[in-house]
View 1 (cartoon, rainbow, N blue to C red):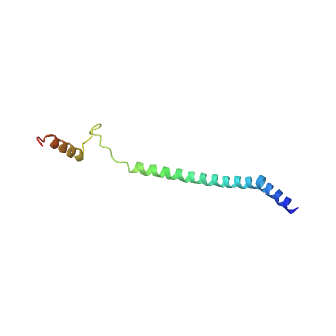
View 2: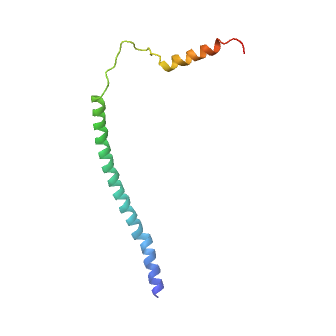
Length: 88
């Protein structure tokens, strides 16, 4: 008799109470994610303001031209030295 009672309570718990607990936990997670998104939006706005304040001045004298770096020049000089070798 007591086994049937425990079986009935187990079925009741699985069918009714467990889904209710799961829905409540999902609702709490949803609320926390909403709070996180609100704070993330505030932080993104502040970061954008800081980025606009720290924007570097752009020198527009030579648009489209790139100054070669010293590393590239050294590389080409080394290649030319190797090409000019004659003999063994």
